[in-house]
Length: 128
Image (cartoon, rainbow, N blue to C red; front, side):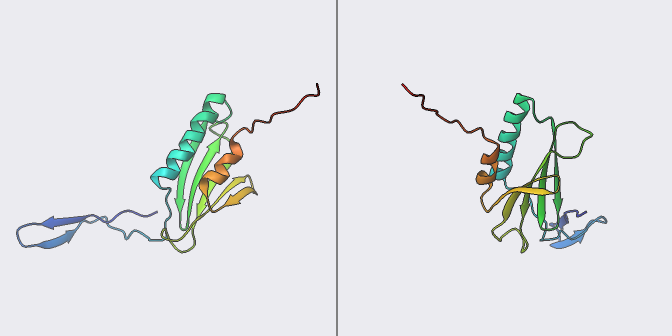
């Protein structure tokens, strides 16, 4: 676990004092961007309205950010949307969807993997 370091600036003598509970924030922690999280939550809200998803959890680890989707609160995750970047947040990340242990789809674009959940409409031509 990592805690952000807060600095208390004292304007009188331009000195910086550190609070007692400071831990250095690791640069290798990966987070979802605002756009990515909005896209995931839009998909989540559609699936909740259909009744197929019920709960979610966000998790951040070194080099990995995980959005887990649950059908029931106390179950294992139904799906995990994972953002992984080995060389920190400035590097181009990889996105993939995992179901249990199996990787379903993998891409460098988040919208590509989220389209896996969109229902495809097909037009069938009937003979006349």
